[in-house]
Image (tube, rainbow, N blue to C red; front, top):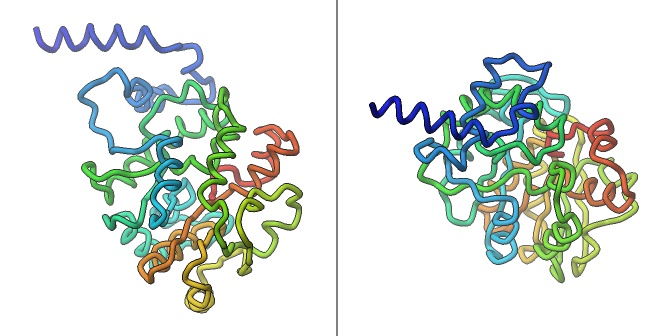
Length: 294
């Protein structure tokens, strides 16, 4: 009888989902079914999922907690954990080991973020992103769950991509809140050599001052030790903003342990510039690797 009641309850919950939107002719049905329970995460009470703050909650934490550093894991980092190469970084056992160390960290001043979309409804997500996460969600969850603690609080890696990710979203307020993280503070941006090459509207203009440390855009982890030493020479009171793909995660972690505030903020500069230029999310996805945080 208990199983029958559960079955009937689940059928009722399925009725609340727009199945026409859920289905994608390019997806195999087993992938749809594997992700279905996470599409209904707000309705299924006993589903075991990690504790992940929303985008808005994650940004608010970074605004109020002036000591907090941030390490963000996107799909590229999960691929490296699996031993796969990605366009900006060749995989290596050493890099994968550092990722496992960071994901297992529970230090109060180091916030660990990964895609909240792995465990949330995708009904308000732009179509190509919705398809991506439905295609890859199960494989990504299987890999991440080897290293995370379901009793620990994590943060939304999408906090740097929200303007291009959600179909309905208050983008103006979103960027205003993001900029409060470093407002009126001295910052140093550590980034690839070409990141700001075409930037016309710089979201970091709200900072008190902005310095730059440039690094290779490709395979930055290969020069990690020398890059870390350069970053350790940054004045301690500066907020360090990292826009450097997979290497940013390790830098943020090591710099936080050395007493700095280091924030891995991925695509935020490009996202803001494209927003001000009124570029669409589709345009952005075709110009850069949308999901790979650099």
